Length: 405
Image 1: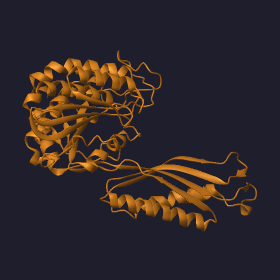
Image 2 (image 1 turned 60 degrees about the horizontal axis):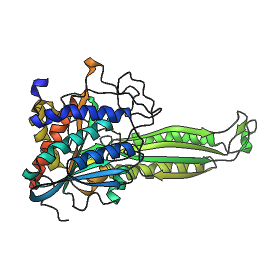
Image 3 (image 1 turned 45 degrees about the vertical axis):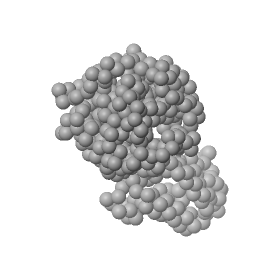
């Protein structure tokens, strides 16, 4: 397998530091918008490379700028920095030292890889035609840090013409890279549904309006929103993960609260599903003599890779791991706030295969024993460096003409 990996001497030189940095960040995880130690480390490393650095972007985000020796566009590379509220149970020397907080999704690796990329590109800056904007983002895990950074102007001054990111991916073996044109990760919407009835005694249900029964009917009927109201080749997932109602076995409550999530890969499907779910809730509650509140909180948009930028990423990835190991994976219904950048500028999001089952490194993301084969980070560094350089050398292939500003 390894004989097909091709990375440069520069990547080889920074790899030990990348691994050490990843382990340091892993041992000191921070939740979203609290990444002060991580942001401080990032800022210090970027300044030591002589880069222009902005801190406090999107609360705790850091942006470094590699200014090339010749004029050209600005290409953005993004890494997320935040950890998860999870107690680590893995037995490794670099295990989390923070109770109840863990890097169980690989963001420690993303930050370490991008710092390795920064070191390589800083040494090549005189050769670059344009700029590389290195974005270290907070709060991907539900906090929408990308949205905060966009609002803080991360895509401006200078204006970004193309954006790239990657995610270590334990659903793919090490040495494999997943790239998909179009939707890769789902829009994620949060729903809180209040089913209101009229409370009463359990022995006299005819004198009450039972919201528990109403909620049960809604849950069964809501399955038709997917199975009978959605094109079967355009996926949608509606899951209710929390139901709360009632305090005692002999009291019919006033209200039941259902909390769930809607996942879609198409904006049209997303809107139709929301309308259909509310229509079902309205009809069921009316039929039972109750009322409802439909509270929809939009989550991350669909993560969509531009066709031309995805093809550029495939070309570079084939050079690094071999053509047969660059795959088109099925999309996932998980969400990713890289979507906010890709709504504004063309780009591509890659999955970096990181699992090694033979070494016991194949736990799923968000698992308390999550870990991965760290050699994948060498592949990630090499791909990102080549991708940034290729996008600058051939802006017509991804992102168009050099952007002003």
